[in-house]
Image (cartoon, rainbow, N blue to C red; front, side, top):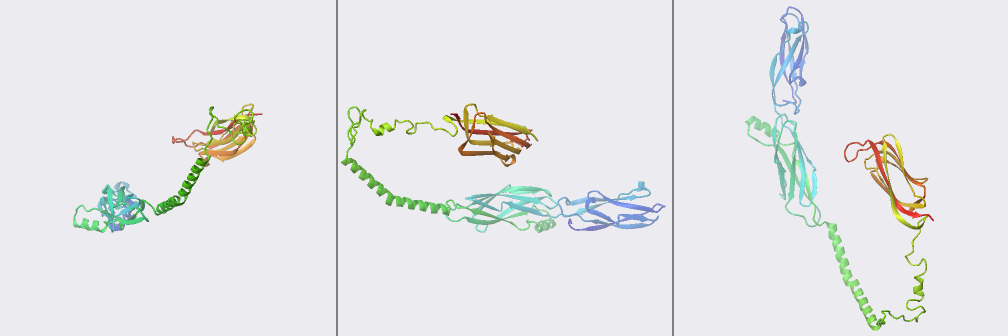
Length: 427
């Protein structure tokens, strides 16, 4: 039986006319777990000695059940041509052992749950495995796909368990349904001895304990929110709506008491209370103010450091750098312009490793380790202005090119900087 020991004996006789030493070696499938004690004997002519062969097969799927040949090579030291290899047969008995686990052990859902049950045959004989669920109240229905497994020694496989509750839980707290799954070897006939062995090792070290947590369709907090909304709606009907209706009635009554003056033939409404001003209708002080320079919202604003109207603009710097090298890319502000920068986006889409440094003119804006980001953006409420002939520069020191979405490592680091803002004329 694997996990135990057994012994047999071998007698070696020296039939030669000289003193001979013999080395004994186990060969064949049993060699890994069989020893000879002693492994070397010396014999005078006409004498013999019996050695012990000890068999200790491990309790492992690698030691298959059944008949296994056992051979011992008896090698003379002085006359190696006289080697002998006596043989016999070892019967390795069957043992059955199954290991199973559920992933996950606890699942949440409104009505259904899905589990994976992994089973491994750790015995030394093929088995057919079945699954038996049990749930105290029978509120759950179970479905296994496939319903049975055939496993060779050391083989593993998975089945999918689908659990369905009898009906939904509409309100209240979640309901926990515990259940068990017994994983056992199915009986397929055989003699009485095999049936007894199967019964002894039938189940997996106790049934698997699993839970299905059924969550309500409408949780408790949603009921509280609905109650609060209903209370607010009732308060609006009782308090706010009568006040709005009363205000509307008062406005209608006031309009009836003071009707608006009718328009004249030219379609103009007469001005009352101030008299007619020189220059015709609408020429009073209030109308004149709207025509003063800089009044109202029609004038153009001036950006920081620039004059005249500005337009949204952007520039992109695309930089490719070899591993272990540094490279600099730049964008130069056109002559007669000032660039008010409000946004930048740095792209490291390959996942390169290294350092990137960004400068606006003579000001260093930031230095970032490439391996800490893939896409990074910065925004300023107050624009950062750089004037004509100044540059936006990005310097990349490539330590190691990354691996893009293709799955193959790039040959060079590849970074892209996009800078945007308002491009205005200088005064």
